[in-house]
Length: 87
Image (cartoon, rainbow, N blue to C red; front, side, top):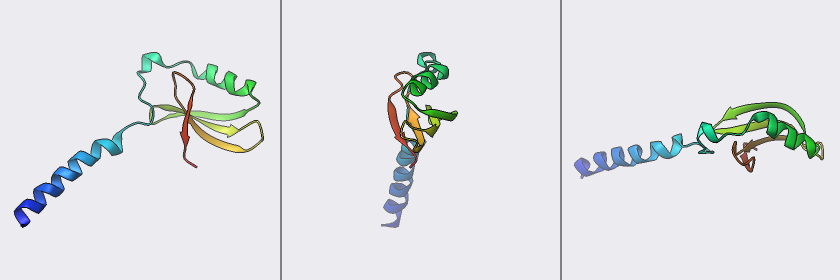
């Protein structure tokens, strides 16, 4: 029984690691639009942008939305579609 359990655990762990390492946005760097375009699009909607970082293959925007609510949102770097947040 033990000889089956250990290889099974090793296999499960090996298969789980790539899922944990996957990025939120999977866009080739060559397809990324400039971060300045994202900032301009959000500013046109009334957002105040404090900082933009790159994380998980996305643009991560820190600032306040049009209602003044603090936001920390990930955007697809090619489409500028919101793809989630850490909140």
